[in-house]
Image (cartoon, rainbow, N blue to C red; front, top):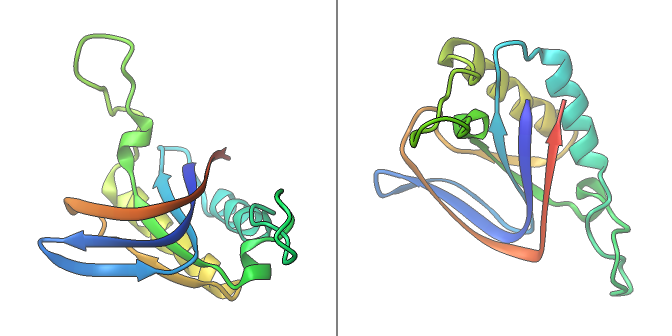
Length: 147
C-alpha cells in the first residue's frame, strides 16, 4: 500500500456535485493498493498514521509534537489507484501495478474501519468514482508512507 498524507485544516470530496465526505482539522489520505497488499499492511499503516506526530505542540511551538489521536483530528480516506502509475515508458501512465477493484475496494474499506476503530472520525470518498477533492493543506505538510 502507498499513502500520500496531507495535513489539512479542512477537506471534502464531491461526486457528481454531491459532497460525500467532509472533515475539519486532520489528514487527507490518498490510498493506493497493489496486488500483494494485505490486511496486515493496512493495520500497520492505520496504527502508524494515528500515532504519527505531525501536529504542533499546544503552546504553539513549531515542530511535530502531537498525533491525530492527540489533537482529535479527522481523516478523509480517498482511493487513489494512480499512485501505482508508472511513467517510465511512452506518454501514457501504466497502471498494471494497481490492484483490481475486487482486492482494492475491500482493503481500503478495511483500512478506513481500522482508523475509525482507533477512535478517529473518518470520512471516505466513493471507490471507483470520479471524485473532486478540495482541501486546505496545513503547513504545508505532505508525507508518503508505504508498507
